[in-house]
Length: 64
Image (cartoon, rainbow, N blue to C red; front, side, top):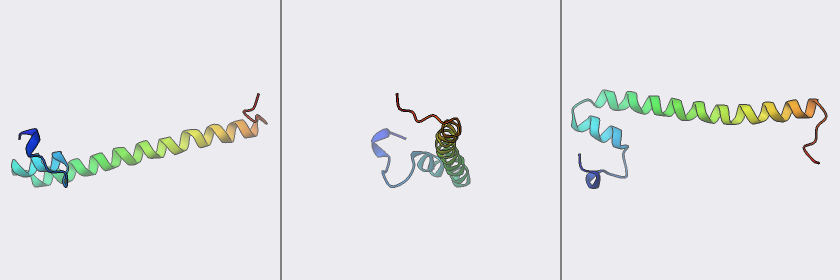
């Protein structure tokens, strides 16, 4: 599929799989991508919060 024929309204993965006749694969790819994004967001929240908690328990303020 040429790059200039891709739509901005739908994921490129969905478009390619739909054209090839594998519409079910497009849903699976979307699920995997959504799961990966949520996993990154979760670790992005978890790591800093644990660091802040640990430094507060040690009495550190982060100020010189």
